[in-house]
Length: 195
Image (cartoon, rainbow, N blue to C red; front, side):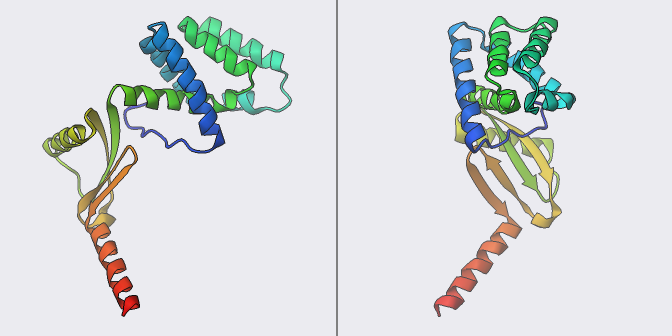
């Protein structure tokens, strides 16, 4: 995952399946003391999937025989220097015809690994760009709150008028003027309806 990418929220049946595969891979990698190697392999594999749209055809084509898919994946495993565990995992995913969910599996593994290491990514939306000192201070404060380290992905949105919106893990902190005005408007409407 690149530094500017924000982890996706994984939801739905495919996400549940992806988390199960990712959890099983994490457990095996932990057991074999190969977490860093597997994580590096998966990051490279994720980038390769994103860079090659033909992978989607291989992963989702309904009439492509399993033998052709498996042969292609074996060739990929042979060509790329991967940890044995990553190679076995990729072959298992291909054998089970779950290649369409491989990207989600990788994202689930990366998210689980980051969480276990106490590493978080916060999406910060601001009306006006923050200074490096402000970013550092905010990252430190969020790190204390999460009891870990927090990397910021900062975006500008001048419609906020002022303040900021923080999205971190399952939390949303809206400290923007736009958010405060919207809350005030809802409060006034509810008071008018109650009167």
